[in-house]
Image (cartoon, rainbow, N blue to C red; front, side):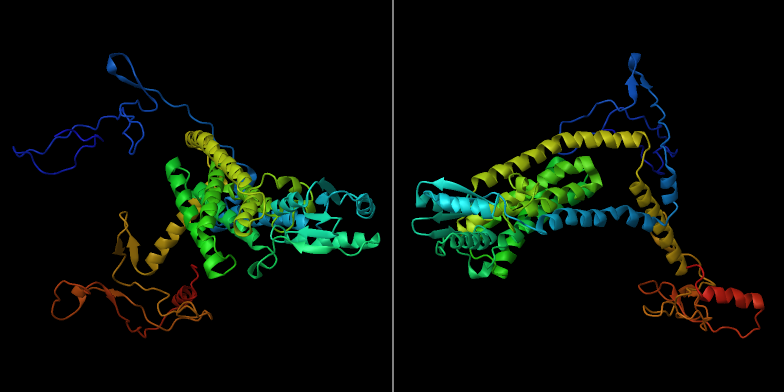
Length: 524
């Protein structure tokens, strides 16, 4: 039989055939790395870090340089004196602070006063009087684009490149509420006021793409997009926070499978369950799956560089900037900068356009959305390729330099605190935990749990008033110590407890003081 690969000597007390104890050689120092599992290239035979082979095949070990001690600031030393759980809470309070600041700077700033600017209007033919009147009454708000035919003007309105179209020959305004409800409501009313001001009758409003009754204000696409974005970035966010050592294929498998599950759930709830979308279930599942995977890859790539703070860039890119710039609530012609410009690059605008094109047949089509999706997925793959190596270099440098972060120190302190708390809790019940994790009885006589008889409302047996308990001690009595016939081994023959009457002997003042402190749970 071949020698074990890990070169660990067998531990046995069995004698050899001659009756003498077995002599085992001292373990040899490993000079090769164990082969890796999976499909990676075998590394058997590669030298171990820090070892060198000299002349004659002898190994010469080079001592690694002693790292300089990590500089600990006064604030960090003070913070380390706090309760471990309080340290962990304090180190996570950046997230609610970041959330409220981002919400105010992005949502409140973007939506508190939307105002039209450079709204494109298709003008069939020419009408210099209308153009001059609009420029005078509403300077900088509307831009007229002359088109040759009414059919072209209608196509531009349905595609979303034009807000509305106006035909002076018939005094008719064409709009598409399914593409943008706010534009279809505000722009025709504004043009009607200007036309009546110059002596022209109120125009006729023609709807090219009406909204259905189950999406009365056209906001379903925006909220479905938001659900897809949040699902995509949260899956990758937790991978980045807790899955640092995972391989690329494992991370990508989680993103792909998680994206499919989220796509199925969101589209099932929005469609068949809530009735906000009728039909197009399979198409929307595929669109959502692709977007969630693309967002997940991008966030996963970023997580190598920012670590546990991945929630910050993820929410900035896919929630705080994406939602106001998406055009789902207000079009880019109503949003301030930089949100108007970000409409061209954020995922929200492409996702809303794809959803509206699939459900209502409006918008620019799938071409722009697929290109944006591919760009985000490719950026994520590039970040993953370079980020993994960068993360591993930083990790090795931290290990070799014996450097830790405040969060790691807080986690270590909290783990030790919970271990001590567990041991104290076991000791209150007369138990102790061994090195192997099994429980054993701490002592059989003169043991008492000060909290026996309590409940979830009043706490311990002496309640909330802190009175001296009136119950006796509850020692552990083994079966062998009981009088009477011996019992056979079996289930239910372990140690049991029974109340023992308290003796009526007179007690000293010191005994009363000690018992009073014990009853009030001074140790807690």
